[in-house]
Image (cartoon, rainbow, N blue to C red; front, side, top):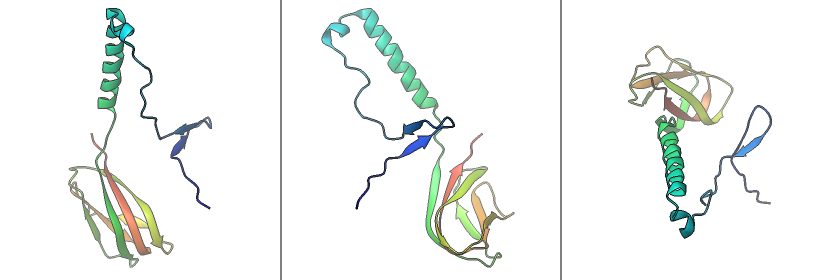
Length: 132
């Protein structure tokens, strides 16, 4: 059996919101509407407001490191260059490992994340700039 999975978010109230959006416009525009200057002005103001909101939306840069083998000795330093120039958030997005943890090493800088691993296996790591 094949099941299609749709990306969705469940908010605190339990409401489900799809992350997949329709490409069709929210409304149709007719020639008669375009002939009305007030209607056209309101449409342009709404469009500019929506565009401004999109420009202000946070869009942190991310880098992924795929299929990194970790040995679990807790001493080997794994260096992940990101070049973001400051603090970063990081998390494992996929793993094939035994039980164990990854932790940030003190050698981490504004340009690279340094981790040590207590886990043995293969990980995929995502690093995201924090900003500010």
